[in-house]
Length: 233
Length: 341
Image 1 (cartoon, rainbow over the protein chains, first blue to last red):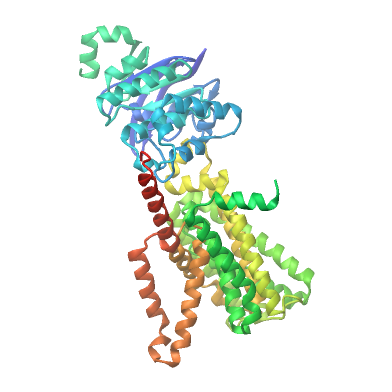
Image 2: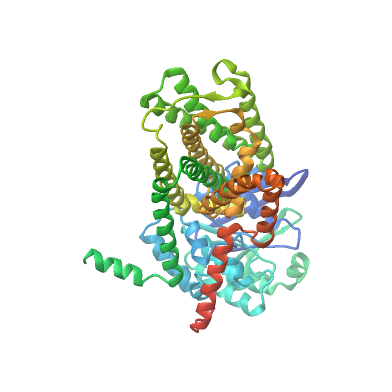
């Protein structure tokens, strides 16, 4: 059964239609990449799922419930974690406070997940009393991903986690995401093809606001022509 | 474990700065308890006024400093509370039950305004909210001006207050208890999960939304808390002055709340207490100096100067400056102790 099913989604910002028909189906436990050139509509797609961008037509069903028209905070409460492109951390709060802020219900399971997050990202554990504005780009990304895990979401939407990071940090982040994918469903928007191949098993390619291709990541890795055609690699 | 041992452990666990802080707080408390016994009525009334204004400014700080709402009609609450007391007592008689009704009425009146403003801020954005709230206070002021038969219009309403609130000494301690209680309640709010969401909304509303928080609800709760506390400060102010006029609903009263909280340190809560103390004391000092030179009659001139100096050298206000200094000291200590920072 699909966890997230999107059919013919059309979304707009102001006067401009950005998505012209996106179709996607994600099953529980999958790690799926959304690939595509700059301006293809990948970020807008994630924002549409979160309810941050308005939808003109089409449907989005998450875990059997419709998403279209739901306010973003309700979408989040349905079990969708979101790591935006700009990390979305609160600069004047410490790492600990940023993580605590995300907690919807404090219980033993939350405490366990906090330990899991801090084990996953030892950098956060070391600096947990530091304000987020003093962190490096990589640490902020770790905090963003870690925070999205706090409420044990059914799916995590991650927008370009490699953006602006040094290659060694990207590698570290990719391994952490691979680890997370063993427990959680991941939908990853990524320009860095190498990272996408490490983390995900399946992909969708979006171009000019439409889903134009889908398949297994292994096949795409070996298909240079397709990479050239859609990703310009 | 005996009480003495607990106390010893508690004190030994504090840093030097924390010990000085606690001692200072204790000293201020002792001074406040002693003040009415060693000073005249004027001083007692002035300090009572500072304490009531401190509550009013702390309530304003919840909006401006914690959730980031600029309420340009905050005088609605101090004026509203004072008018409620004045009108109820002058219409229904000088008694404690009437006073209690005025308190309940003020809370309901403040809550209604909070819900209206909360609804507007959710729909129209913060700038529009600022302008609309200013209009609300002006509407209320005009209403109180034209409702002459009850409010005496611009002349203001003089009224008696029920015993024991007619005693200056009692009023002083009531104001002190009111300030401590409200500071405690508001502090608890700011440290609660709700308070943390307020700060998240202030920093970046959209980020708070995708963490699953209904920011309109969070803002409405903040408005409810701030408005009701502001209204109760109005009740106390009415009881202290035994007089209310339309100036209490004017822009100047909102500016005062802003000034107290900015000067003391926006977003620090207790800074508002310090801010109102500094402003009112300074204002009184300048007024006392009128006899020395006529320039002191223009006390606002000096006030402007003080404000510019604080904004230039302490952009986060007095408490903000102090907290920054404390953080710097703690950092230096960590470096000195060889901790990796």
